[in-house]
Image 1: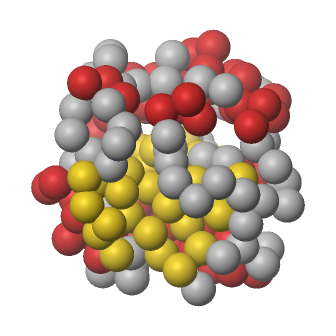
Image 2 (image 1 turned 30 degrees about the horizontal axis):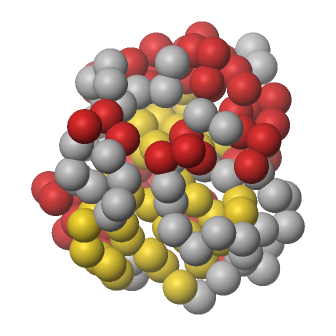
Length: 158
């Protein structure tokens, strides 16, 4: 919970206001599923452990990521079959250093170790290729209208 403000600031820097989780949503997610937040901190000699990137989302038995999931943390099921990914965020000053890829590999490994069937996320068209490199398959345009944007649903099945 001590990281909530920093996470909300990174989220606000990475997404337009209509798409970003607000500070209250970030706090609610941290309360409901802290184990579904993956943080990458800068631990270099001249840094102070500042969070540079994070991934978050919850587990559920529902197969598809739907808009109601973003704001209803109570839907998290720790034993859920699918790991949903709501955001892959890298602070703007830390982008293009491989941090999102490093975190995604860890999230995939953790979801596999937890016995999930796989992971589901939505992304904009320009990021389909990025997620495909990890084995995600584009299932086409999602039914999501989150933030008034067109999203592709992508699934990685184990």
